[in-house]
Image (cartoon, rainbow, N blue to C red; front, side, top):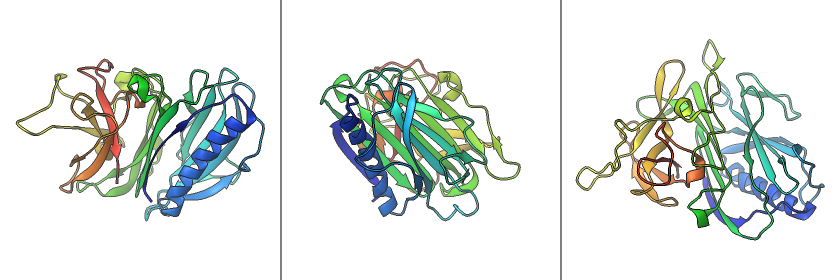
Length: 304
């Protein structure tokens, strides 16, 4: 299985509810392990066990790697840390990407310099169902987690994406990767960072300002993209430092391609891929001022 869609509550007001959302996330990641997209490396979590952590504290982690044919040459490890944010009822999920692991939850090599928080928002004490989407493919991992669809996705939780560089046909390469994290606001980006694995390896400056962290752009900021019956999408890019296209996500206008809907597009190469539009709190795709109306480019990730 390479995609997963679910809608469940998010609560963080007891030991049991903290275990509930933590174990649910690990179970969903396990679907990608079963589908051989990810491989599980290490964890210190015992399911249905453990006390809810104190504020700004991690209560357990799980490490995986992207299990594709490029792993031996250019490994990508993903670390998820589960805990509590600034308030006792604020869930917190943190993320690190690297090219090595020490077996005890510490990633290294060409690596995100610090563990980055991509979920740590308002108190969660209700049973409101939240929508999540996850996809894994060779060279790609994308997660849109616990969106608050009642607000059009505004005020929901977070987004994490890692995508390898690719050649002109859209086939993943060992050159590098792009990491993008979004956090709980249409106008915020938790972190965007480019990596080069090929010699000489480099982790480029991590940025969080919308203009610097943008994945792509829409020239002249149109309010629609239609040409006849065709709807256009914006291509995503990264640096290695050579500018290169990204195959795992595109930019769209939610007024044209609604959140939660799927569509086909060919951002790189000649083979169409399927994408799903995420809600606003995945963060802005481009440097355009982020609003939920015209002029806002949402992120759509691979969905196949």
